[in-house]
Image (cartoon, rainbow, N blue to C red; front, top):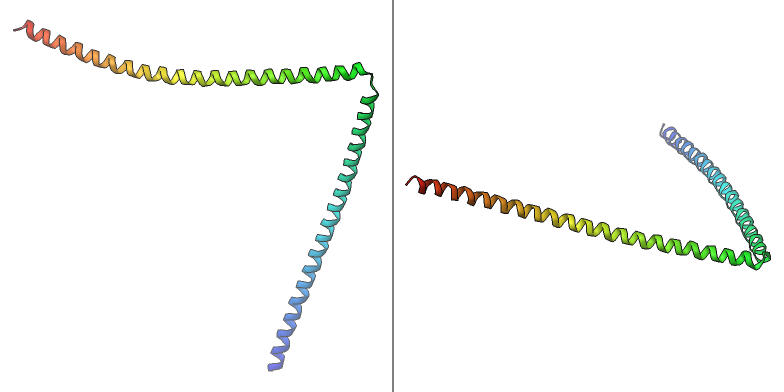
Length: 140
């Protein structure tokens, strides 16, 4: 009976090992599939990069074959585009500076408004005090 229990335990261990082995095989197959897909993608990308390099070289060769005036126009257009970009960046900086100054002025105006309101309240208090004293003196 003891051997039967031991055999049963061994049978369970064998079944567990078989299941783990099957799981490992399945995972290995999945990993192999993923590796193959990654290899295919890498090859496709390599081919695309080579194609882009070839197209770039063709364009560069075509540019060199162009008459000098086309190249000069292209250079001038590039310079104009850079100048426009510089002006746009300069305008953007000026606008940011104006926005900052506007914000500063707005905060200062708010501060002055609060100060003015306090002074008005003080003046009203003094006026009321003067009126009360004037009435008190008038009734004396």
